Length: 148
Length: 94
Image 1 (tube, rainbow over the protein chains, first blue to last red):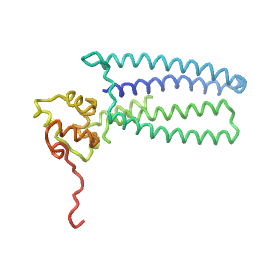
Image 2: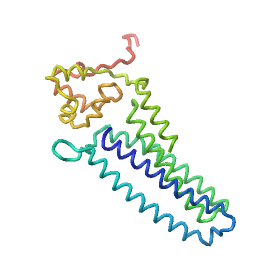
Image 3: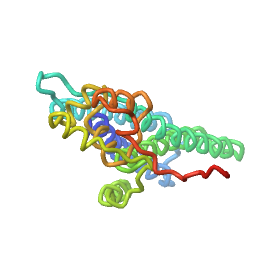
Image 4: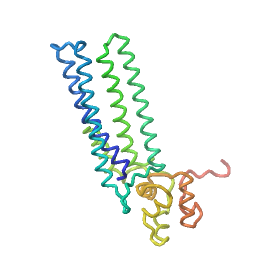
């Protein structure tokens, strides 16, 4: 498994786990009828987002240090060569990611037009971004394993 | 997450069943004839990763023309000795 494939695995896992935690909490808060989401929305959104971003940065750094240590060449350099196949796989994944993100944005525009507030709008946009990144990661990993 | 693992795991297990490209090659044989050149050595010479050489040998990836010509040059043979196209044969009558 190449450096880039391991990197995609690490970030896909981190994204799903960290944003899974984030959206679980957002849905739990939004479902709680005793909480005025509009009143606490910004504070809750900001605090959870700070934790999410910090967690993602820490996981990304630690996982890439571990991956780099497992990808050392004989001369001690990290073998993170990106060749034409890596580039093609990246582009194919991002192509699908862009389509899903676009669909998500259109859905969110529709939600705004029917009167949804900023809390739901912001979270739905973020959800679209996370789903598009996750789909891109899955397709990139599939491309590393199958023919194209 | 679990679904992602299932999909990718199934794809990995089904590698033997993966649809191959229509371009076949004799890279493995040519490596053997070139003083048993390793996949890593060939990869370094043509500037790709060892995983890409493995994918080419298994018929899972068709390289760019530039990489194909580089391979032919390294092995010292014409391009068609390295790669063969198993596409539809078009007759003279069309």
